[in-house]
Length: 171
Image 1 (cartoon, rainbow, N blue to C red):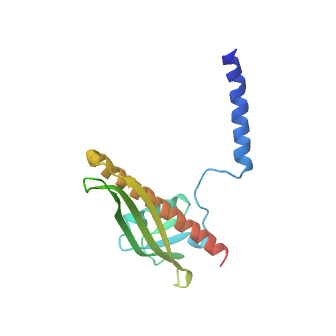
Image 2: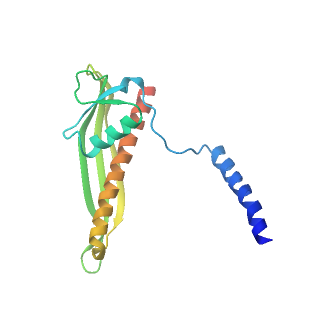
Image 3: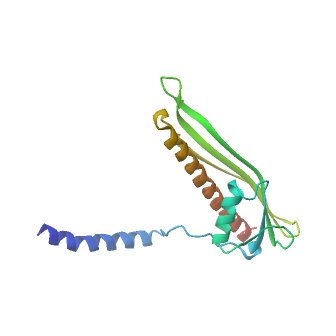
């Protein structure tokens, strides 16, 4: 009887969860729908193939933007004014070694059209994450820190594109 009860209750529970999630407006995060002015965009960055420039390129291409290699034919220029990444010690163990770090990334950007007219003034996006560090798991924790930094750059890229989307809708 218990098995029959579970078979009947499972679909009811799943259906009620789906109704509740859809009623509250939940939906999976997808690509950002960008304005037409970004159709052909040039990313102006010191290093266009790493860091935030790479993350922006990936996110923009997923959203259907043609990311150009030169600014000549660009309908928009996304300028990465500054990019900073740091690891700060948050706590120290009894042995005097760091046991927790704060990973910090910051990007300053602006947006102009292909003719140089400013569409968005310079804005700053900051993201921080905590990392508990264990000296006994050094290689794993270093790999985890790199992975977190990449995730942070992806998050910053999404935030930049969302700010552009909102900023151009309501100038």
